[in-house]
Length: 187
Ligand code: AMP
Image 1 (cartoon, rainbow, N blue to C red):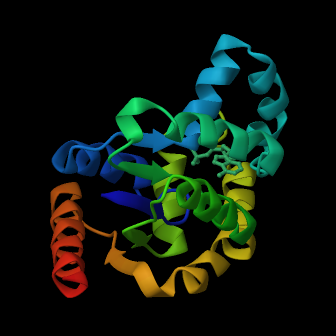
Image 2 (image 1 turned 30 degrees about the vertical axis):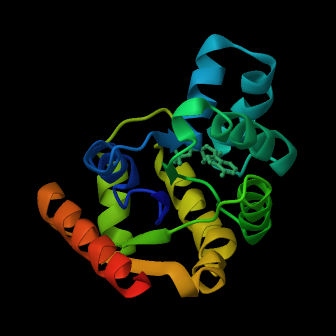
């Protein structure tokens, strides 16, 4: 299974991705986590990415896409993956299509997690990551609306929308049910 998880910051992508990747037997690839690892290790990529993470802006594509291409070339991602936080723009989606196309593959599904903005902002305020100050949270929501939400139309043919309000296990069950329906339709 080659999957992408999309949703506003605070929709629970990281939580669901961890559970779903285990259930589906594919690696969980989070660009946010990859960036944070680079920042912690103080690599050149991390030093370049830091100021974007701090303000909630998107890291430029020449940095992000290269990092993803390298990660997807890893042997564990050959037969599937769950991408969390990438692509975040239509341009990144086109890059992903090209990366997969060069390997003779394509996405199977795009899972969208939806939740009202007041719910996601409240979740993020309770989480306590360094970029979870109210200003940065609000900015990340704006970036999502303007830059990432247009991706939903781009992926309409493979899009599966899941209500992300409720207990974690119920949301996982909704996602898995949606994926198995989608598989059935795809034959
Ligand atoms: P996340 O952990 O998904 O909330 O991402 C945290 C931060 O990492 C974002 O606010 C961006 O600064 C950066 N980031 C993560 N994924 C991407 C991406 N696909 N493109 C650009 N920046 C990203």
